Length: 589
Image 1 (spheres, rainbow, N blue to C red):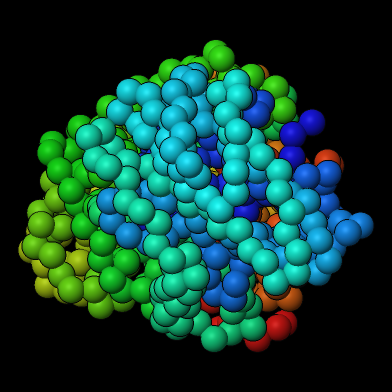
Image 2 (image 1 turned 180 degrees about the horizontal axis):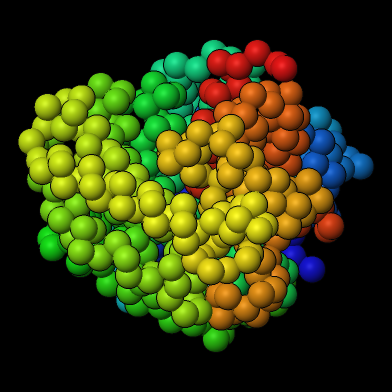
């Protein structure tokens, strides 16, 4: 059985990110970008698919693992019968070459350690040539070159570099791995003492800008650091997760590639960054959004590559067995071809949030918004695939219609409150038409709840967003009934699933775990209904699910007590920030 998903920690450099296991093995890393081919892919297979192990030779007990305070510099301490060592992992922040630095230090006694580097390009498919020059080893194949420089002797055998060495108290060994593109010589490693201190200082300076000072500050700052680590700095785009194909249920087939940027995350991300005090990052994310959606409104996609790429062909990688044999492993994402009407509302709300928080206006933004509204006026009645990217038949999803209402509402507010020009009377009529239809067709009076789609009986946790976006007051009897139905029918050991995945509505085999973002949305509804005590209890349960370094995956299996889905997941950390800020403004009831 592989390491549990929660046994991993994240390191990154604002271009890409890697996952480091409790055993000191980097089992996932794509270079040089989040969406590049992985050179370490054993997370989805076996050691021969690529990894970099550094730890006690005979195994050791982890006595401490933590990030340096307010940073992404990871420290892990191992104890053996002979002593104790500290492993520090970080990725220097600089443009150009991607680097990983690792330092292992003797803390007590004398410990024998093992280093094993298995580079395997193209998601573990290509075994590179290895060439050694003293303590400098290069691995290259096609356009990729990795260069390792280290303080110990390693031997070459069967496509891997291996070696064992001993460290006593006060001694240290440094390891530096750098990726370089074709035709460029790798740079020599910096003094790693200076490198780790510069990286520590950079992250602490960034975290120090956080405007939140409430009771959950540590959790909020860690979530904001995680969102920053999932940002592709050259464009400002924020990926949903740095991984692909971690299963929503162990052994299942719901395995998707999340190394891209989703339009619907824009509203959540913008608001979290602005509320956290990070206006510069919010502006960069807004500008990425405007570049990505440029063109005709009907060509707008639900997700894009990190610099706005549109073609994200979905394919399967048959040579990888998948995490815990959860196949298939997929790269790319065919959801780019889906119609999801909610994304128009998400984008309109993102621009609304930007103006609400005083972000400098952008003339292009309003031009784009007007074009999108014109498209939506003629298309909002079409069936779509919904917020959860259903791969079954298109339906009249209630949450999609609600977000179409949001698009019209935000356009009306922009004209009424900010004086922006537009056909406001027409937009008011559009808003009213959508509201009337949703309340008539999306509400089941017999069951006293809104439903997942028109004429259906099942509920959907996406309906929890109706009150927060302003469609109906939270204390409206229809919303109270909807919240109660969602609690009853989608409750999963005190957490929430997105929808009834056993119903066949999504055209996939049954089964998924609790979706963490939905549980945060439930806490938000409790707050809006004046149920602050229940909101706080649920929030504290959710943050208790974080792993030892404060990270959350997409989902959580409460029966097995383990994380599932891609990791760490932006859409789990974003609502954590929002709910914490909401709780800070509420007194317990």
